[in-house]
Image (cartoon, rainbow, N blue to C red):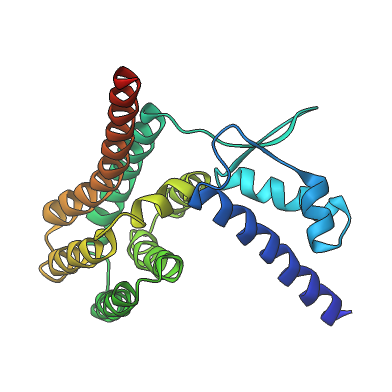
Length: 230
């Protein structure tokens, strides 16, 4: 029974990664339908596990599941990006300020160890691994704020916009810059400087949104320019 469960979980993760990769690579475009029958045939399974995967991907911001239409690749406007990162910066900044006086020396050392691991992963260029470890860095100091409701609120927000956060980290040089930003945040924690910690964490979040908005703006301008040349 246990082996069957493990096999099912592994298969489900393969389905999730297949769809995530197709969306992040641009093989599946915003608004495009993700076909259940094709996935079911590809993995040799019924549609039930596919629908379960769709629900999870919807919660992560990859898909929009619409009754009688099916699953469509979710679209995010510049306004969506701006609003998400604005809320993220405020909540995480507040968490950093509160955590500054509560984090133990051991926890700060752990943040440093995590960041060194991130440095290694950034050099390897493994964005997905970086993303997972990066999450643990932020989760440590957010939990360190000692406010469970705040932690839950941030966790729900981050899950809903997981796709945006991964897209931001995929930008050239973004992982290395993130490691450098973390170093400054750790230093603020060591100095027990809550104002500096809050400011740095907010800046970190705001920059994540900025690179996505600038890319979208550049793409729109390039498309407009191309259209005018025709």
